[in-house]
Image (cartoon, rainbow, N blue to C red; front, top):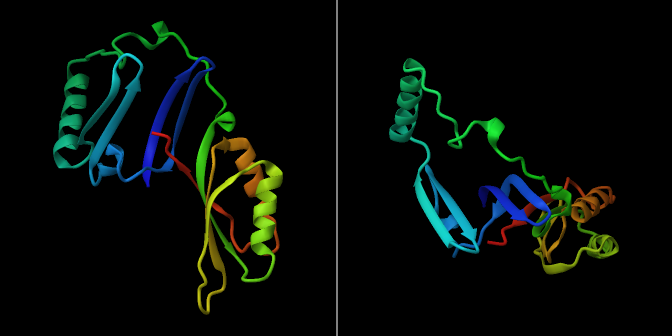
Length: 183
């Protein structure tokens, strides 16, 4: 699970998001740990580029603070994007609710007949397709966890389905959602 900030440009505009995401262990972003930050760029002309380096810790933090102090002391005026913000061309934001992605869902439910059917029927009625499903029995537990992954679905459809499932009488706590990276 990695905290991913992403910006994806399409003909519709730019989709900008920040959220915890499941990343395949084989992907370079999954290998960035501790105080390391990573940047993954993919484009038609440049292909794939991966950059990793320190993002926190005594050395990088001290260097950033020293640079900020030097800028204040010298009254430096350096635009972040090498141009004043007012001269940048604004982009058209894309509504994140329309974004298609796979998801990991975890439900804590009562161990009683029909619960799995109720969850899967609610997802089906909303148009959410289940890719994988797992329920393992838990001895002497108040609830039983159900874990599933979905095929790609619009976020608005998925969140509406989750809201409906959260209101089922057999569901003991709000369902948990993690997006699965498409990278």
